[in-house]
Length: 95
Image 1 (cartoon, rainbow, N blue to C red):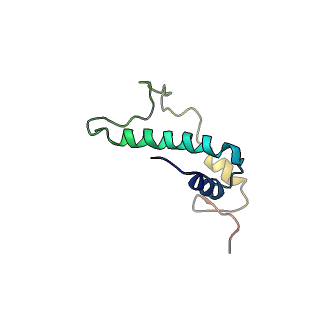
Image 2 (cartoon, helix red, strand yellow):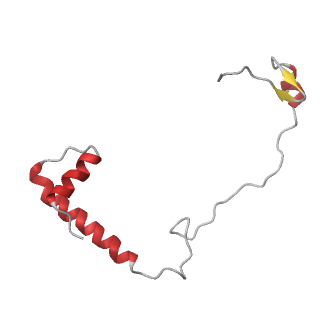
Image 3 (cartoon, rainbow, N blue to C red):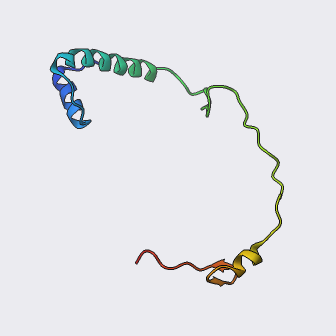
């Protein structure tokens, strides 16, 4: 797909980019190359390819999920301004 100078100007206007008129032809060639590459990639069959979350086959090390502190809910709620049925009551902010 080949972009014209007018199309590049329109794209620059929509993106609120200020580009020099001298550089418009270079931008047109670069953007056309990108669009050609996307069109070429669109023709490939990717049905048997699984999506990846990361290009490297890595696993995140996770720490064991164990309780490391004692439950102090009653202590914290005793010093809270307002508590009801084990929940903290906060003032209404949005009307």
